[in-house]
Length: 133
Image 1 (cartoon, rainbow, N blue to C red):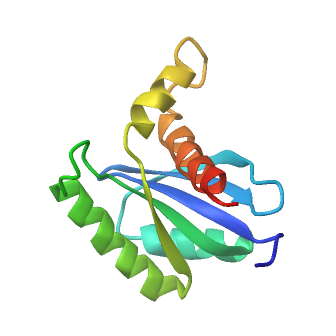
Image 2: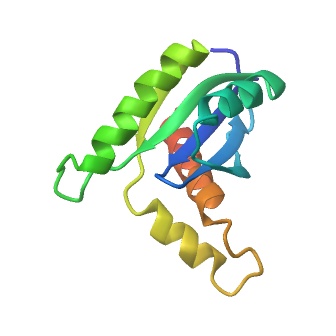
């Protein structure tokens, strides 16, 4: 694996989509931006992947605490399939259980209000990196 590969993480939501970027060399994820979930989302993501030279995408998949696959799970998997076909990149599912809650706690008391989607994406990507040997 090329250690300088850049990865994009996605915290997919019905209204907002949080993004984070990191690379395989440093294995450090950073919040990137938040996009509105509109009809041009795939085009926006395609442009970001090109501009940032992204080689893989990690997407947060909501797996319930008891392993239950919710409606949100189905939406994320369907979006993940569309994303993979539209961008021609590998899309890796990563359990996102409790990432939004953790992101809100990290940002509590800061001036970064409204950035929790990008921070949740950072947590998803960091947990992916931490799982790599």
